[in-house]
Length: 311
Ligand code: NAP
Image 1 (tube, helix red, strand yellow):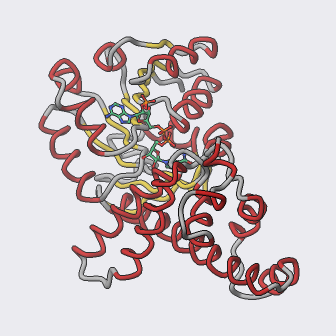
Image 2 (cartoon, protein in one colour):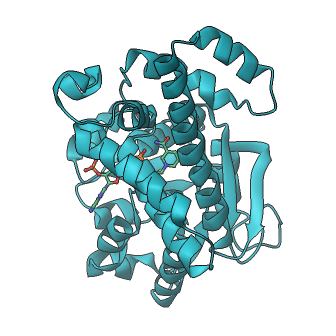
Image 3 (cartoon, helix red, strand yellow):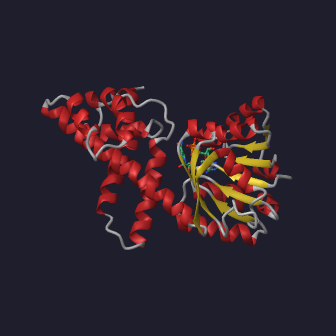
């Protein structure tokens, strides 16, 4: 079954999601603040629109791949020409935002006559393009249930972008966002933790290959270490699939949620400092493995600058 969709936000993830949904025969209207990014999707069969209001006109589902909750509010709710068009439409929010932010959006979208499903994802551009994202759904009911009001509209889209058994109904709106943030906290802590150990191994003069062999054979290993190792050794982090600036956003969001939940946030404050330092070095748009620079070369500038920051 094909669906008429608007995608608002055709950055790194939104563009790949658009490509995947188009390849399955859906009608995709798209809008992006920087118009070149939505215009270039015309060659794949999308309908680029000059405004968000034009993009949402006549669609069943409005898919969001915008950076954060502030961007969503300004695009969807603060512009009356868009808000008034949300009546009887479903907003499918797929970016990473905080649980409270997601709950507040649901309230305002329902007040505008629409309905709301959160479905943040784990995985990056290749997974979006192949339709193999891990999806965490927060909604009034599981959209895979034929009795759900979103079964006919949202479920085919989730199945296009993610694959069973990796589309998980978590619970009411907010719970999907919480699980997504919990996973992204691990992206930050595992990457900063690995960077710190790798830095010490290098400084000690021990052989990095031997360190990695022991790590791989241990219970401490995570595949992300090997994915990021060469970038760290070269200090050349490359174009981002998931940029450092969004990792900073997510660590901040997690810290806020953790504080509200009464958790100890000392580790989070330190993680935030490291990721902020990375962004301050001009590495906001590189792959987030650039946190290695902040950890292993703590004095900014001069000869210690990485290849990426010099570009
Ligand atoms: P991105 O390329 O930076 O895209 C962000 C999008 O938001 C762009 O379309 C950008 O427009 C738009 N935007 C930002 N601020 C705006 C504003 N004030 N008004 C209107 N539009 C605004 O990032 P992305 O990687 O696609 O990420 C999108 C969301 O998915 C984020 O929440 C991110 O955390 C999440 N996510 C990303 C990945 C990944 O691997 N990349 C994976 C899972 C989840 P411009 O193009 O004009 O800047």
